[in-house]
Length: 562
Image 1 (cartoon, helix red, strand yellow):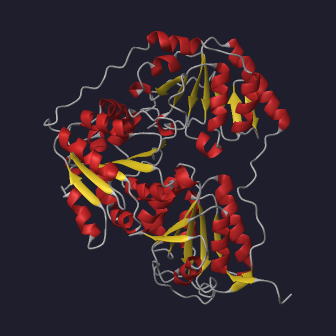
Image 2: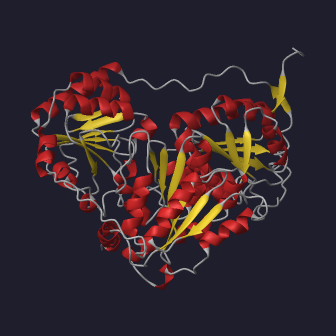
Image 3: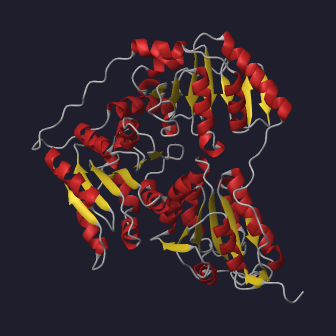
């Protein structure tokens, strides 16, 4: 038995992370994690990405998980963990596999009745895990060496299978101790399988309901991401030949070049002619749709839940009943093989559809406005673009962008955290293939919250192109309810790049004023390598999208209802 291979607890964790597909992890060091970081740094194939603060590390891990499918952030006990928790909560809302790893106090401290630094000074040393419990799928706290391997394995498996964040705390005195090396484990993990009889019954009921309808349609929501059912949706659309739309938080999931794609269904601010088709349907197939006040424009969306086929990650419901243990991909694939063509909704859309008027091109010396900014950004987007949009008016600007095949799209609409976008841009850029160029649309208010991560982009030589919309405040809040609290102090945003570059950085900051300036800046940005590019775009305070103004009025009304 003495020849059994041994590794440290920290090395065991590192090996498992690499086996699960992780290449990078994000961290801010602290004394409870230093030995653990030593072990992770020594793990072949695993790179440490040092961030400016724990919240930003969490946002970066969020962006990384959106692209790579799995991420990890390593922070110190409580003082670091509670800074990270806001980002973890956002990742929970968007079904992201983010492993939040925290160092913990010495395993003897609770028994010895010690007060520990980085806490609020009470004898209770389990507060951090209780804080995390509501915003993660599971909490694991390694306080005994014999639990280490089992808990590490369970934490990673839970994170990947639940597609939710998990909190893993490791006592600082255990991370350098030896345990048996990891045994073989298969990644990726096997998919869940539907109950055959229930699946057959669900497909039969759905097929009869679709056949009895005149104009069935499909609406795709963001839950098809954790269900990994994008291809299965395409199969159903091809089989039915009906109209299909996405909810705003699901943009980019369904190919926008598909001939049956209508655009975004977003109630009063939907794509042209989209709401008429969706709302007049007598059979709505809602695939992974999550209805919130934001995605329904203040509860004004006309989903007909009394007659709809509501397809969730692991169950299907319709007037005929609720069919549990039926997984989305299984259901959609089986339905596609059985369903008949139902083209009426698409034919109706084609009757309504009118040619889209070309966007006027501004003269080179015209003062830059939002319409021209959108037009020029659209011209940059290709099959190797990863477009990330900030919380705020960028949501609506992003919805107007056409995504060619191969392009990806990232938005955090469920949690809607202002500040998410800067760290998420870092994470998406690090997780993307080398040929992919990240383009981020970020507002000035959001940027001020997490601007430091520009320096991390410079440090690790990632090269996203950031369009900084400088309109002097929180424009989304202005459209909801204006007041002096929505104004912010102006910065020299482009000039910040030189501050973060110091002597060795290759970041590029450009401030534009006219349409011609923007065109030249974009050409310069595309050619730039070795660091991020920030293009500061001053805009009038009231120069926002029409959709934001309309959406804001409905959401404000919903917030104010008696």
